[in-house]
Length: 429
Ligand code: PMP
Image (cartoon, rainbow, N blue to C red; front, top):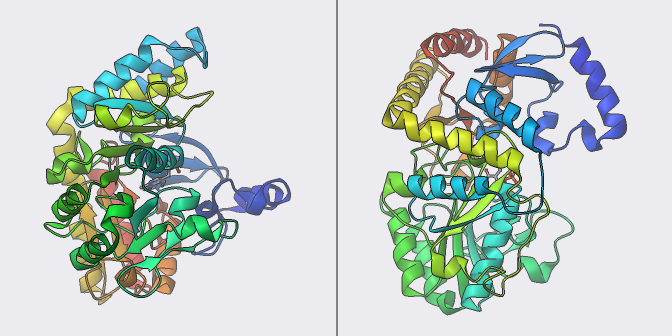
């Protein structure tokens, strides 16, 4: 497969952009090789600068539930071109999309639109601290909530550790307010709350972890989180930036029947335009300015471009209803079971973990329930698998610790083409 144009563009990009990209994982550092520069997308495919048509399992990192450029998004873009892209003043669109969000996810009693998932989680942490008057927060090792100081903190050893920043530039006193527990570990959560519960503003987690690769919550884990946070007067924050509107119309909260106090959205809620949203119980949300004293603001928050694309997408979700999710489930299940079957026939130990249209193929013999177990995967084998599939025209997320996303455009034929590519790839690892 030709890649000379991508190669040249990457060299040029490195002269003007840091590492040639605007978000680190795109640089292919963990899989090696040259990132493909994309010129367009349609449905389940992206076309790169060398003219290769690639089946896309990134789907803008989950932002695209219907694939690239569905007709209703193109129509919304055309409408937007006629009215304007930003006013910095209220519009009816913001009311319509907030109503739509609340219809799909009734725990979103009040919504604040922002410009990215990171902005939503940062605002959630500030709001939780402002509403409770407490400063500590609890997060899980391996859960990613955006490039936010308080949340870029990983686990150390022990049941719960006082956070060590994952990135330079985060003051230790900030990281020290973040307590880290292993994902899916009820005992660890219980002990951190028993010891420090009355100082904890919130427990924030991905209700289905997607940023250590796909790790579903163990039965009872989310309910335990709900019970403990309630008992200690802390807020439960679901980061559904990835799972919101993807695993069900009401996200993981609906799928598992556990209602958080606050929820963060992003990705799908903007239909492919830059967006995030913080939502939740009215009495908590109304601590935000202009009603309350927790400040949050944004020049482009609720801009018509993101709101129109988001509204068009949520309307599709509402109108296609269960059928949409049944179809996503059916293609995703066929892909996951096909991969499992090929890998076992070829003698490659993998765990295919999946919830709905999100999945990860972990190159390990044992099921993955948390970050420590995810890290035991053979990343060299994953990199080879990634490169083989790319040569066959299938573009996976370039890291073992990411989710693949299917969209409504990934039909059975595309799944079968992918499985043919997997057949070749597993045979040559
Ligand atoms: N939370 C989760 C669960 C995410 O997956 C991401 C991004 N992948 C974010 C927050 C941050 O969102 P954004 O990149 O839009 O800032």
